[in-house]
Length: 349
Image (tube, rainbow, N blue to C red; front, top):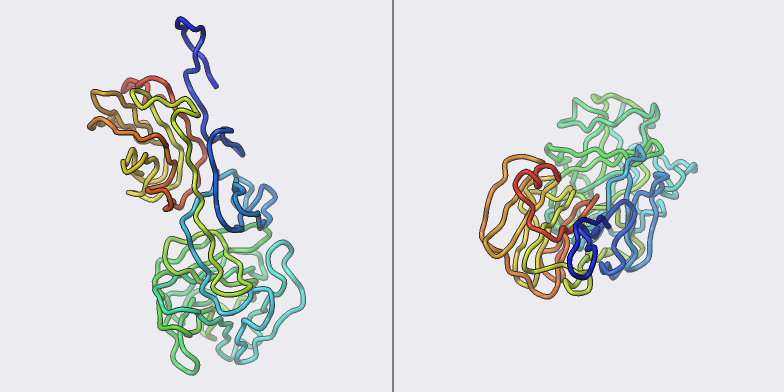
């Protein structure tokens, strides 16, 4: 809390912090009806129980914020913690050594630079999907996903047994997970149920050695946190963050909401009842100041725009569009100020 000024009852709070580093306000409710995984401060892929917040860090130890995500399932047919989920072809062999904190087993590539090497898993349902493979290069460099069979270290592919590989088209996403492990993902490689997804390494590619430590096949984009599998498909329920205006002391009459986030453009940052309060304009810092006369909105300290007055219900939802649909993003900081800030104050905030 910060304080300023005075009124008949004494000093009043100027700012209420709803979400901050590794913490949230006691009257902000967090719910998620399933277990979920995240990268902790030690870059360990950690599983937490139902209704436990995930304050996430990247693979370099940098704080990202409170992780919130919409519902998502892993469409793999088998567990990632046994070798039975891998279809080994053309000399690919399993290695007994594990990568600590990630997955129990790994598959070493290549065993032969003269043949095409595969490691595949089967998709559980037919849908447009995002396939992610967790990889550690033998030389600890970042992996390069090939756009075809002649470039990169390997390709992300979707194909049926005995058929020609369908190479996932760019863009690819590569995220460092810590411990030398990278998550590489290919988008929009949807295919009929039962098709195989995975990595293909061609003799015409780099020939670099690496280990595959796990797979995740998601039923949509964007990429979300890793979802384990014991009985596929395993579903991770949405992270829901909300509070009541009265409980936390937020005014529906006048004030300013601020959020530092990574939400995609156009997705919900605040909502109340059936009313949209603020939508993302891309990752960054955004604030909306409001009273009965209308709103002022500022994005990353830039030009302040104006809009119509807001309508609140009894609750305030953070990074949610409805009572059950979450936005996928990290929230680094979220505050409410008990006055409608001026244009210059918004830019400073």
